[in-house]
Length: 324
Length: 241
Image (cartoon, rainbow over all chains, first blue to last red; front, side, top):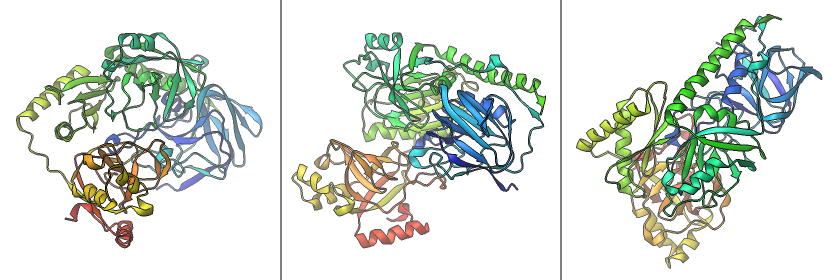
């Protein structure tokens, strides 16, 4: 039996910091969105760096990081969007196992490239499981720490049964992902392709769209050339999933993200393929998104490659361990 | 209703089977019946089935089943089910509601719109049995229909920032219940003391698509009695007939 173990007290919460794992699956028909890490790739890398299970709960940091006081000795790692990390005002590195001692202050700065960073703790963040996941879904106050973003004074708990790692893991430089100001994502057209003119589809696939200020875990409103809809537009609400590209009457697309509601009535011109979703989780307002059409078989191979890539990174990482 | 169901890919991990392009009890019943068949068949590689107004979403794991194989298996189920779907035995919930007053601030407006008395709105709203078309918008929110034409009212011109938990609203030819406080554009005509969603329940939502719902007008006193019983966990809306 494990006893809850307090790891950190939150001094400053950062702009929008929540607990996330790989999501809450299986409850769509009850109206519960999937939630989980916006960049699931970086979350898994953060977990690897402290020897966790790949889907353990981490802190998802948005734009500006938190300041945390350690209440216990703990190993952590920071992955994802490029962010400054300091321990007791001394610079520390992202992408490697870091040792923190009781009383140390960990401060994360502004994200310089990308939009979200992940802070993992050895053993995973310990919050109660809600419907099979620890992910925070703020809109229905579900999961995470009381269903909300972190605030000053919160305590972050871990698991006391987990032994510390005896070695440090560092991500080789060439495996650290780059985050630019543009996300190139592949899409499968439809399901409401008939609601658009050929010209509309052409516009959508050949122009970059800018992420507006209305961009959060629920979805991104994009600005760019108007996508022409046809004469008969299908507006009956039906299931939506993260990655769906909906086009309301304005002709400006909206991409639904992990916390999006489960149903929606705007016609969907396309859906982003699963293995490209993590890149989309790293764009922020004023960044660009480009859509490229692909086939189902290409998308399915891309997903296999994505899973393989994570496995390869894991094995390379374990070959490069160094003793503390 | 389409003469034949339409199969269309949604992204790379979901299939949509569409039975029509309208909101109607006939199309929706078809979706629920098909949902039962597909989820009971426990096809390997299928993750979730999610019925909505006119279509069924089936999510799958492409590393376990190919799209082509999934479509052919689901089509076979569709053929079999055409031959003999037993009439679905819907669960019936009785939902107590206090109409009007502070709990239903828009009932006066709804009555005025249709040249009715408030009591007529209550009678018309509570005499029908509604079908739960789907759950969506927020966790546990039931979209119910079909609302009588005599009280069908368009959405508010500008949505409210906060609609309280338990509010019963109407919009066009639908009615619904807010499981928790949320922004909303529906006309609010009453409030129920029932809880509609609790993540500790199995399943977490009180109502499921395909259930039927009838509203029962209650007094404020009864509202609070039921509210207390709900908090104790000793009120079952499915056994109130």
